[in-house]
Length: 315
Ligand code: CA
Image 1 (cartoon, helix red, strand yellow):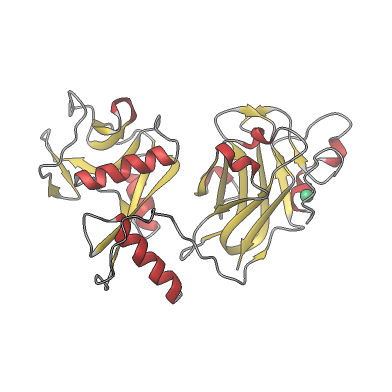
Image 2 (image 1 turned 120 degrees about the vertical axis):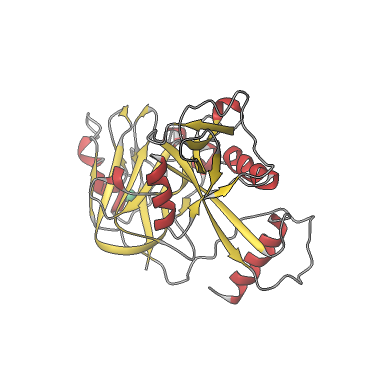
């Protein structure tokens, strides 16, 4: 990490973590559904742990994150289990303190694990540990400097300073997609068009965009040939028509040829992101995602997937 990055992180941490000057907590939502035990293991594998909702300040941070990511209708696993044989909960082996934002009527014996429940504004609910849900991990950096002034007027902005020596490792690699649009365009819209090194964003005239049929959750993948440290995926959406079709695109990076087994990179492509030229989705700054396969899939809807170029920025 560079000195500049250190400084920025310290500043951001101090601004964000009003509840503690010596601790910077970063919460991160993972949009892959797992049972409670697997969610805990997954956080651990990322060097994090399942988020602990142990104070009003943390609860507010969690709710703000869920709202920012547009996921207010999703449930999330957080750290917290029922003690053996009692309807009493604990968080990571510690008894709960005064902060217990249970939803009305909860806990009601619904299960042994703690979720943030969308039906009740993400207050707590006890649910079956085997249910599969999104989950929230946290990491805590203990800062050594606490003497910096706190500027409460500056908005909190996530800063990600990518290494300078990244290169696109996807160009010319083997790509696949769930289907190929039929009709006379067919020969010109195969999966390889998204890695042909050409960002031409006119999907019809440019003849350089991949294009699937309209179908439920269409997908596109590329095999990079070997593992890379992947920092960012840069997508050129089509500009001649219909950029909205790329909404709900989810990017995954990992070593499984079955892309659904791989973890998600960054957040879903939503809202005005579809009009960015190009769209940058970051997978990590200090800890890039490692993987051989990168996928793009439109989730939760029936749509065509058109990708004029997918650049995988890696070391
Ligand atoms: Ca292209």
